[in-house]
Structure formats: C-alpha cells, structure tokens
Length: 338
Image 1: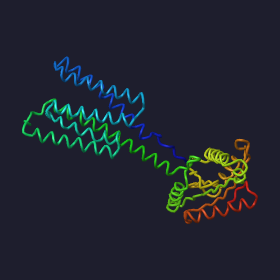
Image 2: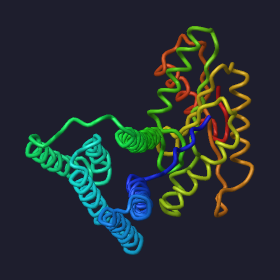
Image 3: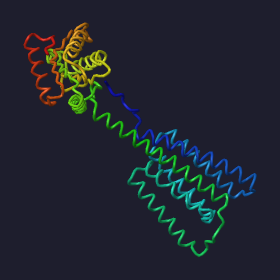
Image 4: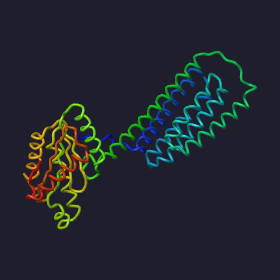
C-alpha cells in the first residue's frame, strides 16, 4: 500500500492565482459599474472613478504577467484595493453599511503580503477608517435598510466566503504536502521509517484484538557496498530507486512498503500468516533476480521473515526479522529465511 502525493502547489502559485482573480474581478467590476453609472444613473463622476479602477487593475495585471514580480504586484493590488475602498467609503459617506467593505482587506492582505506585512497594512488602514468615522460622527444620519444595503451585505459576505475558503484550502494543501514529505523517503518515494513504525504499530494492535497474524519482511540488497565503491553513489542511488519500483510493483495492495534505511527495505503485511509471508518474500526475491538493474547491474536480495499473532512487540518482531536476515546472508545470500 502506498500513498499518493498531494498536489505540489506552492504558496507562491496560489498567491499568484488569487492575485490574478482579484485583479480580473476589479477590472470587470469597475467596467460594469462604470457603464451602469454612465448610462442608467447619469453620474459621469462616479463612472470615471469606476473606469479608472478598471484601467489601474488592468495595468497591474499586465505588469504582473509581463515581469512575474509577484511581490510587487501583490503590494500594488493591496494598495489599489485600499484606494478603492477609501474612495468608495468617502463617496458613499459611509452610508448603506459601506463600511462593511473594510473587512475584505485583512484576508487578502494577509494572504498576499504575509502575516507581518499584512498585519501592519491592515492595522494602519483600520486606524485610518476609525479616524474617518470619528470625524464623521456628527454628520451620520439614520438611513432606511434598502436594496443598496442588502447588496452591500451580500457582496461583502460573498467576497469573504471566497477569500477564506481559498485561504483555508491553501492551508489544507500545505499541511497535506508537509505530512506527505514527513512520511516519505526522498530518494525512492516510498514510506520512510517513521511511517512504517506507525503502520506496524497499527497492524500489531489490530492483530492483538482480532487474532490476525502480522508479518514483517526485512529486505537487504546483497553486495550493495560494491556498487557504491566501484560505480559511485549516484549509480547506487539509481539502483535503490529501481529496486523500490520492483518491490512496489510486486507487493500486494494491502501491504505496507517502505525504505528502512540505507539499502534495507521493509514490508509490513497485515493479516498474513507465515505461509503467505514466505510466498510473498520468494516472489520479491525472484522479481529482483529476474533481470539486471540498469545499466547492466545484476543484483539479488536477502529477506528475513518474522510473523506474530500480536503477542510480540514491534521491537521483538524486528529483532526476529533481523536475525533471520542475518542468517540468510550467512547462508549465501539471495535467499529467504523465515
């Protein structure tokens, strides 16, 4: 059993994607509102502001696409958003709950600029908004809850929903990637020793509860030191990678395969009695010996097999498998001992 890697999407890639989406939304939103203000509401002043937003967002989008400077484009986008929000609040005089739009800045600023710069930008902007509210307090008048207010609520909640969903998805992918890397051997792509320890502990615990047998196959590549000494460590790494592929292609779907360290590999076989474990070990040995490794390196493996019904600890099972592997090597290598 192997675990596929999560999508290798970097934070920079997701920042760039959010940046592009934000700028496109600004472009389209500004063009739409500008057209409406010019044709339906006969307000050329507000329309010019909307079209200006479209031009600035388009210029930033072009700049980010042309030179690929993500950090500069991120700062320009956040600055553009602050300018848009400030102008919108000033033009609307804070009416129709327009101040709700200031809540859109923090998730975008934190995601694009990082926690440090995002915190400072957000704090300064919020301070400026508070000063504006304090200065405007004598002039605020109660207004009815109309369609404009409803639209502001709907648009702000939609924007926040999209931003937080995107941010949380990015965090989940980063965590999945980190977890995968912490459980994976970087050379072979198989599970590493830490993940094998977890799988073995789980299988032994299940065996103690159900009485099922758990088998461990400890595999060692014969004469691997000769390869490293005669052909170099790069050739040795290539052999280990090819060996991992052959083992992975041969084990069953219920088995746990990983690299134990150096040229040693381990297969943990849940619900597998001794006979089944020996058959699998022999199958693995034959698969490795059947054809040489590239470039034309004939190699074999020795395997020690240990089986328990759950009464042995992981350390005791490993000690048995190690002793039998040692015996297989002492008896001439290229053999299974169980």
